[in-house]
Image 1 (cartoon, rainbow, N blue to C red):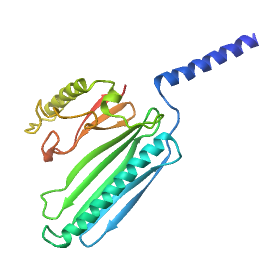
Image 2 (spheres, rainbow, N blue to C red):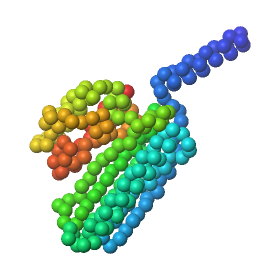
Image 3 (cartoon, rainbow, N blue to C red):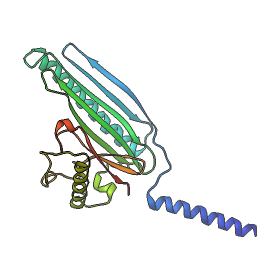
Image 4 (cartoon, one colour):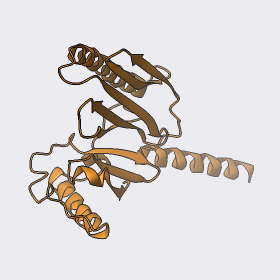
Length: 224
């Protein structure tokens, strides 16, 4: 009897492990740390979230590489702003902000939401934009919307168009920017999104599909 129970327990454990492997689900939680870096001068200011994934895993290496690249680009832009606005020809100054937050850190995907705000003196209003960084936790590879929805690019575009049509109707938005040709030149890596829980949030920045006054447009899909 004891032997049968032991064999049964082993079989159940093996089945559980097999199911986890099959679904690609990882019980591991990715550990990370953040701190805000600020740079200020008479003519320009910059702040960005420095996000670092701990450890030497594949996803840690991929995320840290991309964050380092983004930080370097932000600092380069800050130096350009200082030089540009020192003359006073284009106004008295400018600021640039890069805010990063983790929306998914366990399961199959590691997901980062990046919100950027840029304002230059003399401009009508700040310019805001969204970038999503999404990775397969096991492989460390960057994943795109077609990957997480498990759809080809054309089908993905059609489903997004259908969702946007409903969104505009629900919120009584008349967009002179969006039409059936908007996504004609979109590639797999063009759509910006983040993952939270069991949903995929597709985000469009101001002017992507609607006027600035509308702000960010966000639609959701169930995570496959």
